[in-house]
Length: 380
Image 1 (cartoon, rainbow, N blue to C red):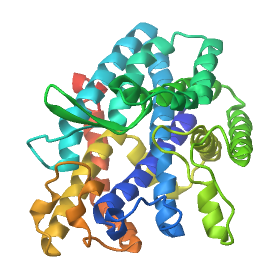
Image 2: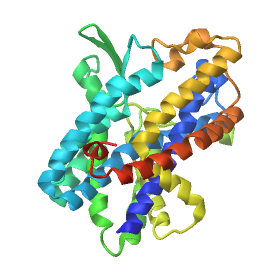
Image 3: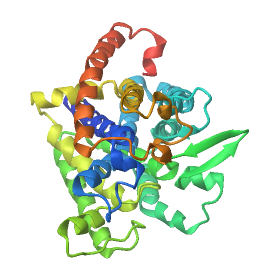
Image 4: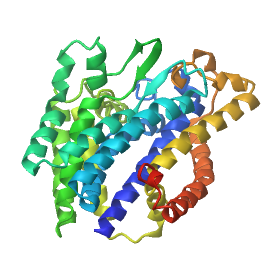
């Protein structure tokens, strides 16, 4: 069991690093202020794949949170697990509103509350306490039903807040607060349920074989749906004279709400990676495992560290630090057009900032271990 938890931590850490690269791109990449990085006509392969691989993040967070909820159930029992998941879910929702929104903007006036991935994970965990009671058959119906059919919601009007929260991406205003809803809840619930199911399977001796079979099946389904070029992704692909443009078009997944094609591809990929990481003793994976042991601390820290670094660079490059005190999403700041660096620099800056944050993450893991008896450790 410990080897399987280790493989989960490695995958968590890898997803966190991928996320950090994408967020550095948001705050440092010159092109980010001119066009969407998955724009096949404008992006090159390096820019496209930097954003493309980051689609694994919301899918991976929901999937791994589902797996973790089953670990919590096995460790603390069904009743205590429900309480813990409810408390942690509520904590994540409040954290996203109060701490993460401030990290994105550095604007203490909170001109915009950004409801992102932690908001979605919080609600998934609140539901997760109930899900852990369900049989595999019921969970299978929930997971397959939501993942397979949530695309039908595209046919319904999306101009109301409830549909936006469940299935879309929008801006709204409640009690004078401007809300930016950036992650869709409904597909995440299905992915979360799928994570619980997979965790139940990998406690068996044939875990690696189960992961390989199911991962391969999901990838085959992805190819089938994508070749059909219909249901499963609102963005249709086209064949061109340029192989790279054709490849980018084929892999251009709808991000919000998450498309069936994207979910199938990245869930299949993650299952194969979990199988590959099982019983793997390679030292190269240890930094990922460390980050994966404290993912929430890394998540909070990386937002503030990246934004602070961007603020310093904006001051040095002549745009002024105040240009990084934002009133909304960084990519919507038209006054920053002309600011930034090439995609190569994005990777170098990420490597440097990871080097800065890694000792802090290691220290926190040790600090938390010494304070396991304290109530706050259950949240972070």
